Length: 311
Image 1 (spheres, rainbow, N blue to C red):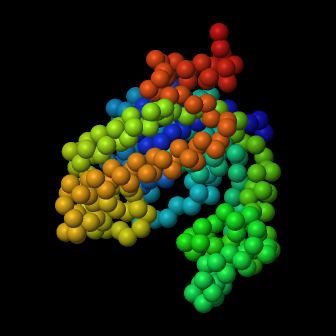
Image 2: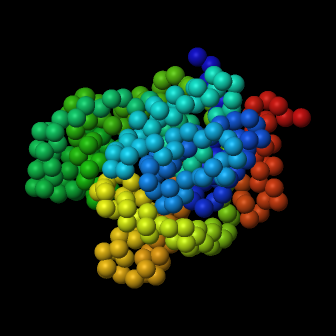
Image 3: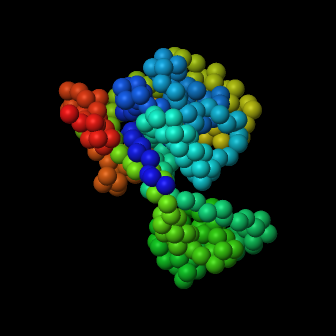
């Protein structure tokens, strides 16, 4: 199978990637595949900053707002679904644009990661949780280092769920998660990626954009959206930044001003984590919106070279 040329537009929240992705897809006759772990949910349109019809510029957008709040959706499920959409877009002679800020979604698609179906044993998980309670995180990580030293070094002691999952996968499959991750990248290369990142060289300018975005979200009805979401679900979409922070205000634990400041702070921290993730990928061609006179023009040149239409 010939690899599908796919353009990725990545970046932190409020960097302008959604608008850039839509404009470039319009320019090149493409379609957009969202790579945002919260925009997959219905009912959190404001908190997830999902694009509205005007922002889409008439360009078809996929993998947006299709899942009910409270439903789980694994990375493997996302990758399988998004890959199918990309194949369909390409089969119709269109250029796929993957646009978003969820680093694991972006890298899994760009790296052609194939996630194996990992079995689950609830009795074993219960036993491992009991052992964790008895021995503690540090001892469990020592045990894990015997058969998966890479995961033991990588996992934080507070990340109980992933530590237990590492034991579970090994005991059920005979392979460590590290081994499975290596094997997952040795399969067919479905996608040939061009990775473009957009951000701001001056981090404070990005943070100012985040603060303004939060104010606009509140003006557009974020409080009502959060109340509705919190009343109907306890997982999935409720984890969206914007709803968690307003829960304190809704429950009478803080003022709206305090909740808004918390939301701005948490969103800034999230953007910092996103940048840390993306900066590890040396394939990304970075465009700095505060230094470039024409960010879209820079991206267009990269895409023309990639698809072989440069003048």
